Length: 341
Image (cartoon, rainbow, N blue to C red; front, side, top):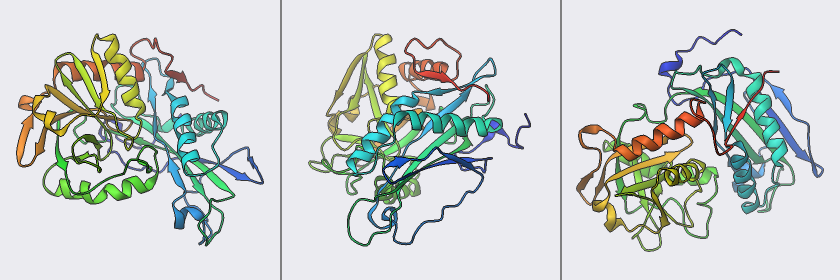
């Protein structure tokens, strides 16, 4: 297998051209068998529903190289189920779990040479995308849909990897509202947050930390990931109807239980920020990223003194990534080997 000419140990979190993507069409009430293609473009009708009325959802998952040379997925079925939940909320045709799984396996097998080797610190990022493609000018759901899955080798989402980042509390811009679509993975949520994220980066921060848009009193999530905090032996993460249910967060809470931590998924007041011992962001792209400090109304609340992540955050990261890359046994059944064709 000829490897691409890439410096896997220093990859950015960015798109790299690979050998193939896979496409399934939903037409006349049924899904097609899926077709691999090297074409990176889409031919869409100018009146496609996804372009005008936002019927667009996506997922993100990773494939990892193991010490024994094999490759594996992490919680693929949870991504399939979350895509289905997103589809139902936007009145799109849900993708059956078996089609989702087949799509991921087939596209990874077709791009096997792009899977970063074990020990590089990189992974193969898998991006399933579902869009409504029927031409409409009235506001109505699409009749036909496209499921496209592409892959790209990536490094850490934050350039420094497992190095603490700085957040600033956002009090003016809202990402999503309760009762809206903040709890599903649709592109509009990310478009709505770009103003806040770019503004924070211009001030020297890595990301924002949103507050709930109803009372401006409770923590929601970061611009690109869920948020957690640790106080004593308690792992806390916001409960909010406008937060995306993170598969990484779900996994880390299970690992935290095994470490003997108490778990609290509840509304967390912004006034609790000074009481945290550790804090972090977590998601497929961010994995677990420790938070060095949170700035709230001009005051910096520091959790990673000297730029060193706290001991519990570090242990959570170690245990999670050890399972993801096959260094440690998987007692939860979260991983699945992708066999060579």
